[in-house]
Length: 166
Image (tube, rainbow, N blue to C red; front, top):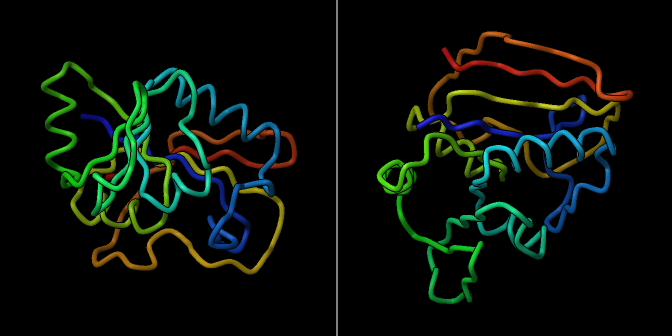
């Protein structure tokens, strides 16, 4: 199962600027790239805080939300709440015939997947801003992650980088 982590970041490494960050600070070009990639993959995995910040299921994609209390939420056709471990979740999706997913947040969820060696690719759009924030990638990781640059390109004033995890 290929896990593609997709994030926008400030130049100083913040992917979340507040508890209810709705990514208004990311560019239109990044939002278009995010929608195109996640729609083509068809499955997004996120933590509870990210889901609550978004406030709804992303259309035309299966939205899977990791939470300790899945019974607290009401699922729908394209919105699933689960307390499965990342490994169990990916194995279940693989059994159903899926071969890739997008991991879209937040930082703790990314760090957990990365610590388990489950992230294969990282797509980061670096927005041309420096801001204070509350979360960056890798802040709670217990192991290092070595990356190899696959691609980079301009998205408006931002830079998209695609890394493969070694």
